Length: 334
Image 1: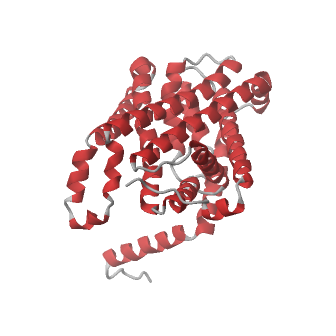
Image 2: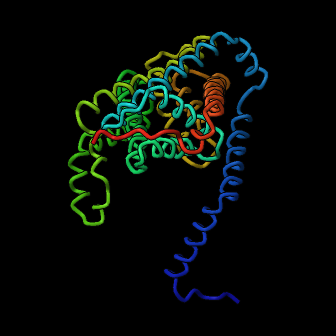
């Protein structure tokens, strides 16, 4: 005998709460991500010729990989400079070398923890301990991400402008619309900020949050972001050239930001499977087959893994008190 639901709204609410309780179970969440990752990888592996994939990898060799690794490591150094610029906007004078070590430590925790924001948490804690202001430290890490998104939007729009005829109209429209959304939101941020802070509930938001929008900080941080993403695209270009793939650099300005954004969807471990699938999809319009696209995804991810491992080495060489408490305090000039 079927039981009727007396209160559908209450039933729906309890079902949603049950779902959220399941998602808050870390072990279950990780297991679910592992399952979905395996699902994506299985789907991709069924579409490729394994022997041809191995031949493409063998064709590339070690020297291009080493060049790509050095290029990506240079990109992390440029990103460290961006972080220092954001710290300076809050009057924190922190040595570049210190921030570089913390940034690479963040790379390690990003790649070797089951969440992609683990490194951001570690950087916030390490910086907050020496500045004695965890809120402002969190803001620098958050804006470090936001400047990266804005730079990706600019690069993506530039790439689409060159190759819009090669892309399906709906893909073209989605890429342009999403990029413009972030760019317009960023441009109008001061207005949005004043609207938000007009509400009493937003009174607890630290006013330092708006300081990163000042022209001096904005231009320098955005320039550093463009530099990093150009180097990240260059990593893909190095592997493409080594594998004799005919992919213009300007087309990678579309493909790489697209794959980077897709890989941040938190349904797989570190975007594995999503990244390769996104590259496979977008590079197909440039005449690149499945094996070549997946090799490109695998090799670029191997560079990220190697950089994360190097970050782990840097972290292990830090003094114990630095690893736990982030060392001596640096005062703010305010």
